[in-house]
Image (cartoon, rainbow, N blue to C red):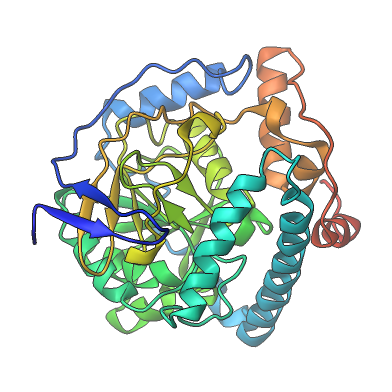
Length: 374
């Protein structure tokens, strides 16, 4: 591999310097009452005192025991239905926020450009169209292979990987590499995270375990009190600036919420590497760092089908969940967030702030009407 590569997505090319990843431990003061609670401190201490010791709860695949009762066809049909509704909602949000006066308009301009480019150049892979998704792409397996060659992946014992299609091979390499896989429930709508242990899977089940149905069958759901250490985070992206590590997702904010909750659990800290796998055409040079929000998660390493880029990002990583950025509607959408908010308020004796109201997507309205807090 050459020491530099020229990438063109927009009109101006730029050079990407390849250098070694340096772990950073930046100080970053989150907004008040973001995630500072006694439970967070104790969780961090417990997971760091003996980070390699696997907790006794991580033993039996509870999901595997449920496998016989799982209606796989119905589960997948419901997942696809909810995914379609969520994408429709995101399309509405992109039109609404794409107005020039909206502060998020620039993000949708970049996302649309990348999605359009991938479809026009036929580098997009199913599920298509890739608009309003973490886009699957030609060469996703090659990018995953490069990711698996990283030292930070080789030494990791527990890897958190997003549930999207382009990262399926990363999930497979995690499990086939005898590591534990932590993956979120899609859009956090049915729960929180599930842990899949390679030691509890037969070789012929690993490929299935990398799918949403397989996670439901073989994974063990965990809660906020789980004592777990995550050694590496693999995150999906729509666009990343390789010069700064600035990242854009598909626009729903779930990657940021997942990151914030893992910080609360003490499972990760500033030094936990964040890696993304993506197509070369998703590399951009026009994400303004100064316009990123406090909860946006930067990327340390980018793996494409052709290269590995170490960004040496100086963008501070989020320290938790920023409650004053969360709308009441978003909170009403995600049960685990409501549980966490209640837990922190009970432990601190203080009421957490709430963000401004937002237009509730149709999916969230229907879901909320069908569910009730216990």
